[in-house]
Length: 199
Ligand code: GAR
Image (cartoon, rainbow, N blue to C red; front, side):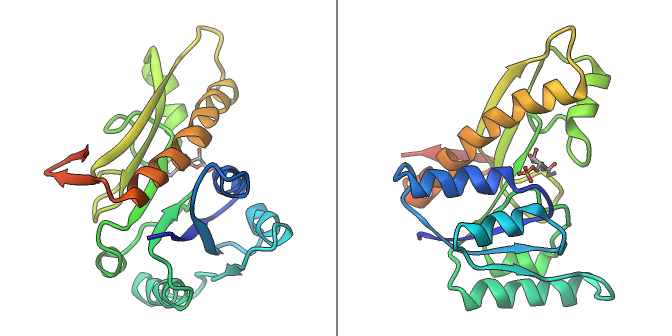
């Protein structure tokens, strides 16, 4: 299981970190395709400049099922074995999840189950937590809810703004996403209920 399909909606810094780790020989995998739902996603250009296949599938005028059917088709066309959501800001249908059972990962900028959904870092600051962080998890049919593969925590400083907290969390995102992908690609794990156990 080595061919990755990466789904983005914007900047694509997590995708870039994964690509850099692959190029640097630190992650044994291949990026088969990068797909964005937004034509203006800066990550698409980054992918092309790295010589990767980058595709935009706009969602305008399509319902979720029609859209997800296109996504599944594109990923299958490129023989993708593991789908990595990297700032992909769309909910996926049950049909999509079933097409890649336990083969979809997501990164979320909070210590789940705290602060699912949008603006997780804003939610963390507003709640006054002292520790924030990020989570890589398998994607199931519920939002930000599947079994957790890895987490990393960072302190929240008194002087933090959303910007400084986002940057501190992002540094950890870039580190743990590749590590989580490597662990999943190794196949050396079992999923027991909600727990991902590494063997
Ligand atoms: C990242 O912080 C990622 O964790 C978050 O979007 C950002 C994308 O940045 N994802 C979510 O909030 C998903 N619910 P990037 O495009 O630079 O990787």
